[in-house]
Length: 377
Image (cartoon, rainbow, N blue to C red; front, top):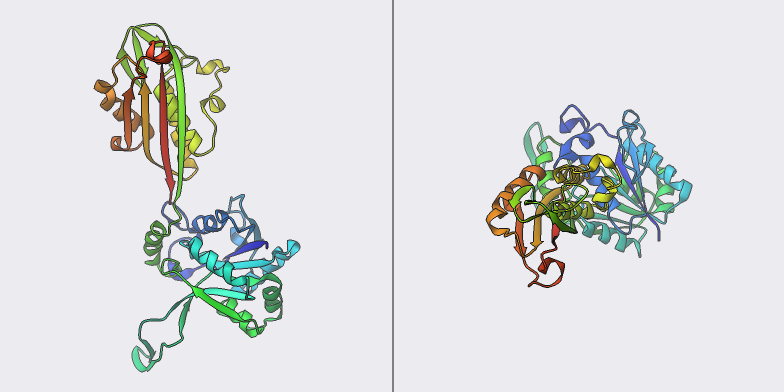
């Protein structure tokens, strides 16, 4: 079964305040719309994403993970436009989601898709648990029973042909797509929603959504490893993690041959699937002759952040008989922290010997291995 996600993002959201519509305002360092799109882009069962944008916003979305179409004068019209755009390559199922719900979990998506296996429509919701009142002029006029009442959420899922037909026939405003489906006689099954799947409506909701994102179990965690080796050549110091250490030889390489920093750099590149130092700074290019390895590490750290990740921690092990690393480890951590832009407590530099075995045991060179952990909330 093919599944498309239809993200409704054409509204202006004036109640949310701010100089820009709420979907373009930032939470957790990125626009709301990017968080929402990521929920579907990373889900293995979503085949396509169609985003419905306001005519004034058509040039704002730079994602390559989705298709774009123009919205209409109302939410109903925007959804209809999105469905018509998807109909050019008809999916079996469609999940219609409000862009202002950025903390959607995989579990909610799975529950909706699971229900669509046996029902034409499904939607997440939460039972109403608080007392309900009817009011007028700022006063309570009567209480209402809450039995059988639910707070609706999205994504609301449908067999595509059924909801397309329902929207095509609908000629009255509707609160959501479930209302459109009910008018068309479709059976809509309720699945469990999620308190974190809140909708940004008012200014204070941005902070609540940011907190919900932290607990949405959607953190993207990446691990990368790096390994490097450099031989010794005549000299009087070895540079490791940018710290010169007096020694009876120096490390040989096209750049400054900082074997530890090279391993860390490759670990960062690896975590975001960006190859290694050689891809970005080819040894065949003479401009990198004798270059300081801090240049490479700075580039890797900047590229990591450009991909939207933070650096959680780095662990580097230097393998050699000599020089002794322990007395210099703290200086190495401090220097790496300055270059990478994280706290020294997030960086580990340690050493081991190879028990006099192999080229490191014969003191012919130094090896280093490193692991980098990245995360994106």
